[in-house]
Amino acid sequence: MKSVRLASVCIVVAGLLLGGCGNAKAQGITTQQADEMLKELRAIRAALERVTPPPPGQAKDQTAKLTNVGGFSLGKADAPLTLVEFTDLQCQFCNRFSTQVFAQLKAAYIDTGMVRFVTRDFPLDFHPEAMPAARASRCAGEQGKFWEMRDALVRDFKQLGAPFITSVAERLKLDMAAFKACASSTRFDAAIMQDMNDGRAINVEGTPTFVLGRTSTQGLEGILIVGAQPFASFDAKIKEMLAQPR
Image 1: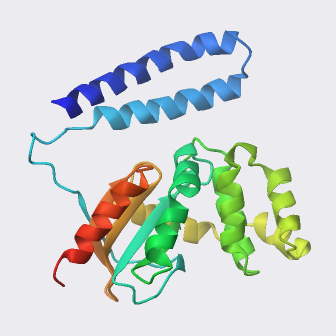
Image 2 (image 1 turned 60 degrees about the vertical axis):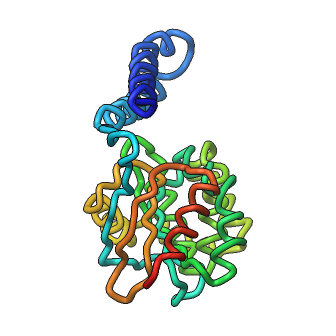
């Protein structure tokens, strides 16, 4: 019942926030900012209203199967487990995972050869800078600086925009002519859309969302981990999965 009450409270809060956006417009924020706030809150409310908590004692992990586990990755290719992230670089919750959880996860499991980490793009349509940021990361990847660009953008997600992306590219000493030509093109749009389609196929609705499972050349079959969970949640699921017989 606790989870039911929590979902109900969240729905009420989202509803109150939606009702307050009109007042926010009157208090100095722009129409565009108010519209973006409304879109995000409606998405949150819709997701919460779809929540149907299982009966007490019967909670089960949602399973997922990915046939395509391609993407930029860290860790050993033959690590026992693979963790696939679907991310939006303008998402505050993705920022929370990157700044508060990822370093612990990397030190404990990726660097020790137990988990291979793969990142996939899932830019949400109500985050106007998410798609340009996804393109920029991949363009930096052409020059061997994918992870550095991605980390800089998600850490300062509130500054996202062409001037900030350009400043990061200059700081990373990229070939600026090549980077700008790439970032202003649609070269990677098909690949980004493929990431999104793969995510939707396993019911990814928001970011960050993760799939954790046994590493296999046939794809990835495992469980969904939804949201910016604390390190302890990832730690428990990884240990549980590592303890299971192959």
